[in-house]
Length: 264
Image (cartoon, rainbow, N blue to C red):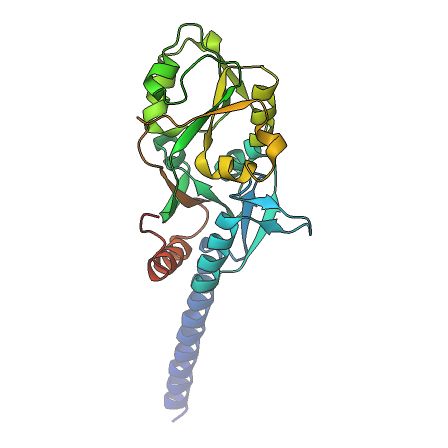
């Protein structure tokens, strides 16, 4: 009888041991999952670029791209915070930082796809235009191809930014000595053209429309509509690859539901 009791006790202990092992494995897996899926909120970095995104007079993020992004994340039930930084830092943060970092309103390029995940498109730009110094002797209906091929023309561009596939290819044919690359924001580009520091630069139609509300911003500036430039490119939300794919799927589902991935 004593032998039977000892056997039953041993069997019971084995069951308890197995249960403890199961619970231990469960908690290890849960902890591992928490490590693999980083916790919210997402940090959305933005820079000053009216009317897309900027800090308003109340010190809050504003602009129509900010509002679109807020509506998407609210629909996806994803918490986020906005953080203002200089434009040249945004992509470096996405590329190099270990946090849950995102940004919004970016064009998709092969280089950026190497270090960032892109959502579905959230907006399609109006066509790009050129702003030129007032005494730059060209017709207002000049094509981009003609403009970029003018001998000795000096072009002002924003460092690290793309001006669309079509004009990027035209820019590749311009001697480097004729290209001035700067980190200033778009307002700074306008002021440099006004001061005659370069012949022309490229802006979006949306920016020019916003500047028209401040007449001094376009003083001594000539707007070139560039009729050969294709319709505007699509803009996306981007996140570094530490942001879990499940969050990207939720964001895409919200974009689909809000029908924001359709051409504007």
